[in-house]
Image (tube, rainbow, N blue to C red):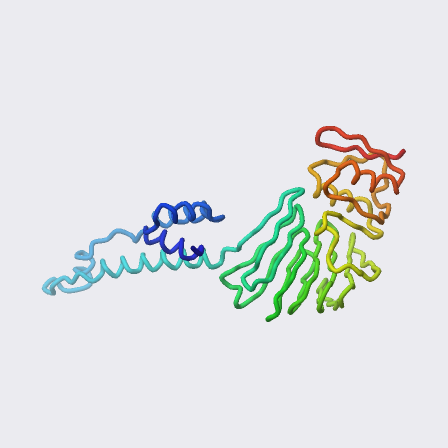
Length: 294
């Protein structure tokens, strides 16, 4: 049963046991319960309809009981509007943990593959009017053809009609790669259009030129993070997103550029892939790794 139908039946106090269990599994279950509790405290001020009528009309006129039903209707409408506004403006949010990836299908059957340590959100109720996704982290999009589709990040907006592309937005790192179709990237009020194989990259506030990408999908979908002339600090940050480890550095220039890749499923192999080309050594403890110069 769809989320909206569950909420409607819940409001009508008409959920069976199976539907109640499904309702309690909704992501915003706790928020709905809190909203319901808050709305129960909402009530119209107490008053006497007889006394009010006496104040407004001469004593000789007969009292009419039309105010109380009217107030009840107003209260019901207020509650209904509040719940409608809350449920239709609430975004669906998907979050991945460290070393976790997931796939999402959007209302128009576009798909999103979400990389580790990332967040994506969208509003299903307004999807027919605006195809808009908010992203923090990294995701690969396959967009169904239709009206404009926007990916909004803290560093810029990526706009397409129907295409395949990858967006990575982390701390001081913004990268968009087009794999199919045409992608428009708006950053600081300037728009750049990308054809298949082309990449838009801004690292630490600097726009970088990249070689043409020949792959048909980003490497992270296949369990590997790859880099071309990327400062070591960003490589380390991505390493921490893929492995549940804290990287500690000792006397290392974190601005050194790294070109290469590391796997997501073998910690020692991944460490060697990064440290050997840079002449670094490492030592491991339970939840941290020390990198230092050899």
